[in-house]
Image (cartoon, rainbow, N blue to C red; front, side):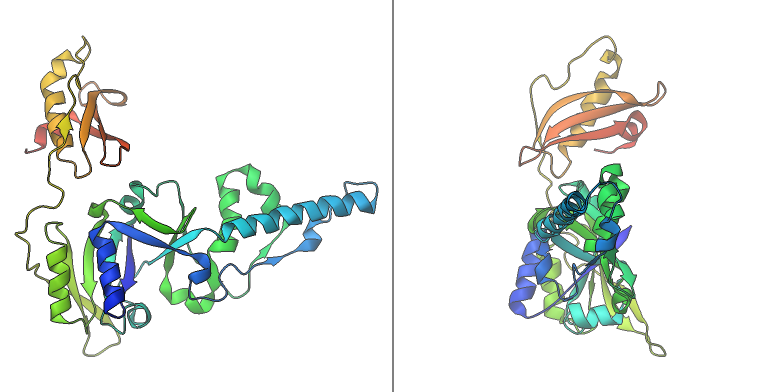
Length: 329
């Protein structure tokens, strides 16, 4: 799914945002810093915590208050989460006005799955739910947390991803992180940048210059003559011939291929798979290549290449024999 991030502000804010893109990082904001004062606002249905399980009121109140205390403690902990807000639309005129400095800023297009794959894959990703009323958390929400991820998401959806219907035009998608702050992402998840209708030519040129070599598409937003609709018009990348970003080849450890009777016939395929993996932008050191035992088929086996990134994170690249044969080095 394609998602969009609107950015804009004074020179210092634009400089900060551009630096974040250059560094392949996103900033997950503290929940208390978000612009909606009703963020994290929920009601607790205390009556739902009344259970006919005890012989006396003292035991009942002790159990009831204990559950409510657990809920309040969870809400307190969740206040430490971070939120990276995105939209499903690149052409909402209000978003361009509010978040892109009255059409002078820009909007970033990401592929969501690729955006979270590098370091955010385990984080909570959700559409925002727009409601007329503040959500109510009941004992069922709390007790069902142990029932699986769907129930866990249910309570978080009420707590972290519910807003007033007045915000509905934003079509917001949230990446909720365990902590606020900067998080790395794969630069290839950034597919395009849209410039506002009032964006200065000098700013557009600067963005293209600092992001050269990344194969990004660029667009300019223009209003239609006879309607309240914004259209995108593709514009040429002035630095399309720039040196390819992250094009250094990874090193290969000695003994990365251990030949056996089962994989010896695929030696040439394994060697080419390693050469492909060396060209992966985040690959620093190739440590192993072999046949996958649980992917592929006899006619089209799958090779996996294990490599370390610059921050020593282990990654696997899976390639079918057909993909390897077709790849042009």
